[in-house]
Length: 193
Ligand SMILES: C[S@@+](CC[C@H](N)C(=O)[O-])C[C@H]1O[C@@H](n2cnc3c(N)ncnc32)[C@H](O)[C@@H]1O
Image (cartoon, rainbow, N blue to C red; front, side, top):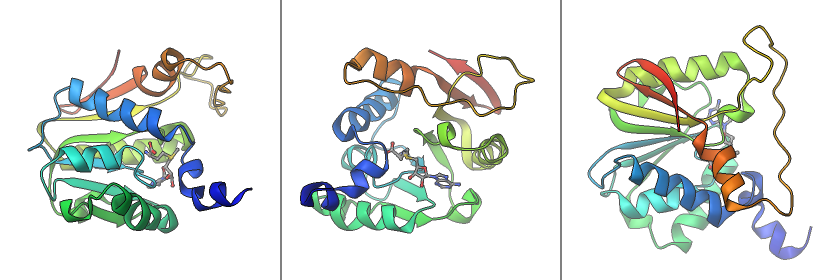
């Protein structure tokens, strides 16, 4: 790994495509109604690839990020927030891995799990969704990316990540990372385009 790559390890660790996937998730939520006064819960926020856009847009203190890796969270806090000059927007960043979201002590208008369920076993996904439901306001929404199980509901084998290629177009990215969203609204989970 070269020096530059080493210092940017936290960007690679969340899958690279820093600009593309960061903007994609931000623009997606804004298109789906996120306003600056809303409270957003970014589940598995990593080193804040999307977080930097949300923090810039939201009212100070309205962005909450939870993340299992303290190293990624520290990189988000100490490198990216400073780089984007956003420290004074007071994002709340909490290290946790058990989705104990009630411990955050507030409810949220929107929750996002971007590229998180695509890395988790089914049990953890269910735990996360159940706990998100407890902290959403009545008309609040969770959007999450996930992979279809092409072999049907009785297949419990891991679903493999489709391999991006050098020729991956923005459209393919959108399809893999955002269009397959799970929407939790008023306790009902449905898939949406
Ligand atoms: C591919 S990264 C995506 C990060 C971020 N959402 C983004 O779009 O850049 C997946 C993140 O989920 C985090 N994660 C995995 N399991 C988790 C858990 N149980 N609780 C919190 N975060 C978790 C990982 O540590 C990692 O930072």
